[in-house]
Length: 343
Image (cartoon, rainbow, N blue to C red; front, side, top):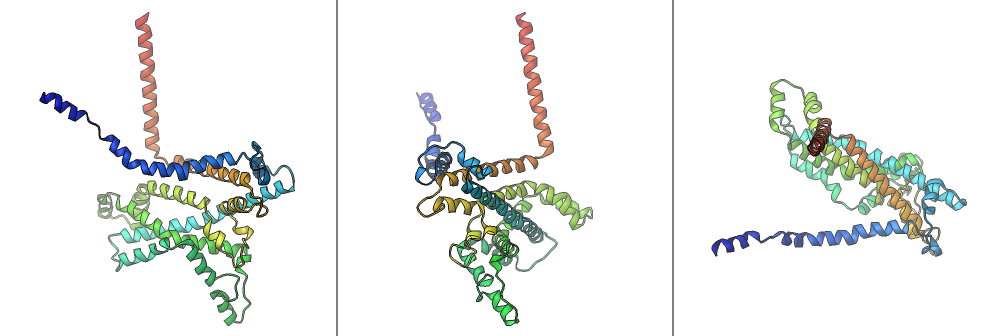
């Protein structure tokens, strides 16, 4: 009897309780992420304006990719293409200085040879911009540097006897400002990620390099960067996903209401404009917005896969290929042996 009771106790599975605890996350994810994505995919094959319920097949994709049809289609194609170019420029322009600055600071803060006073305070100060809302940051920089003659930069120019500059109207100025804002907002978060990656490296490797007389540059090139590659790849992919969906700062950086500059219109802003107002307030372009969203999703997925595969460990890839070949050869031998046994 005791053995039977013990076997029943051992056979009880508590896995269902784990599923119950994680179920709320998946329910929320399904409702707020998966279903909107599916609905967006469906909308991309529907019409626009008064014909929003009509099925138009790939017409919206053809409009955005080739601009075939009427003048409106050509205009949408040109605007979408320019929006994609703007998005790439703004993302690359803020990611490159961001990763270099973050990596430099992470190496400095984790170097045992450098005794920097107040490291904790510096880390907190550098991370602070990341917790400020984008709306607040945009409003702050609009007071610093914008078309307004009362902005801090134009006031300084006026006091120097120079003419005020329309910063928002210049593609170089406005893009540079948005890139700086994005870098300033996110370099602290990237720095913390790089620091966690460096602290995860075995300290004995750095000690051995110091004993062998390696310079700081050699340690960085031969130890830190190669072992930090997974974290760099992770940062690159997450930054790329966020960069391609960039919306808030480019959308908010303008003085006049609704005066979004063509050189700052990103894909996310383009989607918002089509979905929200379309060509006029009474005719939102749901199909165009859905098609643009799906195309952005596909491009993001392709680039993410490319970056991930391009940065895989060569030795691990080789070993995985060898294992597949061994399994294939073993199955072939088993098949031949079975055929020989039948004969």
